[in-house]
Length: 94
Length: 137
Image 1 (cartoon, rainbow over the protein chains, first blue to last red):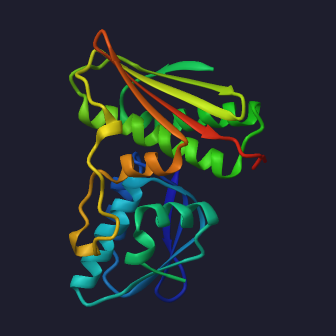
Image 2: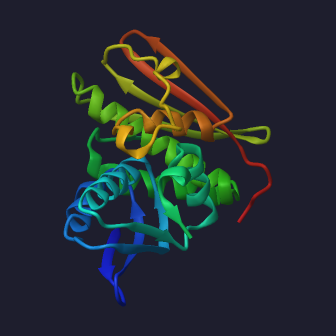
């Protein structure tokens, strides 16, 4: 189960498991964001390469439109996975 | 534990439950649990996406051996594809040059302690080992 919902301001809250079965729906939801934003991972338990691909596509799209994308509150394990993938150099992570 | 699953993406939630049952049985958690879930998903989705020539169920086996979790996934009646020799992803490339694909296999290699491939009688088996490392629940 994966969910993305609008939080305060330009913050979007991700929760659950973003696996290959959920990545298409996740990308469709992320495509609705058309402003600089912060994706809050506080309730995101798990992400695999398919979910990371959806995030990468979102980053590229927003940057091309002149917007920024920041990720926050990554768990230790998700931070590790981002490191293995080199995503810690691509994404603005706080 | 050993079970067969339909070869389709929507089975991932069921596979996750199967993996979690095993992790509970062997009292493993933390990094080992994340790595096992991720490696199994990446191998299974690779079988689903790139080997449509067979619709047979995929078999997943989970066991412990000394201080390691050993998982094997078998795809029956398919062409050979040795994932241990897959092309490396350039993780230092800037985002505009990063392409989808290949990342899953890269993560498997990073997050497992051993990765082996066997092709026999039209069946592909990928075996991984992950150290439990005492990071228990």
